[in-house]
Image: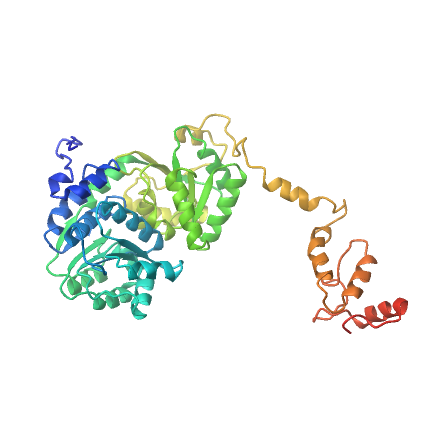
Length: 497
């Protein structure tokens, strides 16, 4: 089972067995084809296993979850007592799911139980797992504090504590919540902190809550490797042409899973709808989606059921997929850190990748700052349109490719046709297309129902008394003129008058 691979002239890859990891954990990883340790894992596991506090400086995608997860699982033992013994705090729901899945894999040959605690989902299932004696909790700060405040989550025996992506927690304003959480866990504990960068507040946090931590920097060599593995293509593109360019890029030869980043959640959903209409198998992950929807979309992307994922930055923190071939920045990120985070979704685990960034005319100053910070040496993005010949050669797009697949889904068109059928050539918005809704109102038995029916019969377009064109009152009852008109033929007062 063990194997060593030469990956460079100076680095020999180490297996997990070499690092002193228990055989049942080694077997669980090997069952998923994971045998060799990444650099961050090689450095952190031997220190953390005996209980040394560790600060791991590594960006997302370097394997840090197993770097802190293996020591946590192994230190708890094969059959830990029921109750929370380990706490892993993460900044986002998507990352909570991803870390939970990794730890669930590590504990698959043990009695240890893992539970994910985060917002957007019902409390009941999470509380039931806690009551059943889950020993490892992976959670976001808000829901952790909420359940702890309700005395449904007891952290007083949590002797293994991990803060993952601490710098992102700082960005999201969770630092005060982290301090509250540290006051609830065991005073004598083993603490690990992982962060891509180490801003001042994170350093202060580490000094306050950690005991003589060893600082491990694994991001510098990986950063160089990532840059070498990723081809960065920067285009100055017109906003009205971006969708067409993206649709053609998605037909490039050799394209696999693709992540497209947008600045806003509204733009993300608009692009999902547009690409779906063009025939692409696309899902979305953004803040306007419910948590269940986001998890289904992410699971479909990981499983390959959808090969395009449109995401916003915060929602993308849990995209841990090794076989992403392309990353497309629909809008340029605000700074170089966000750029590296986005681009880092591709070129993972030694693979190559392509990162395409669109720069609007108004955002050239942002690109200038990113270009200078990352030393790309490309101060002027190439002006590019969907018809530009270099677009095809740069991205290996077959000649003649258009922005719509021939297998585009036709489900939307029939619905539109059904809405338009029976409207007549002169029917406009709010007329025949709205008939079903007014018909339901006429049948509802509300006051003035009879008057509405007769009035509708006198109108050629069939419009009811609630279309904003009649002289109805704001309470929905017919105007007096309609009552008089209704009384003359029947000799009776309107129903409900």
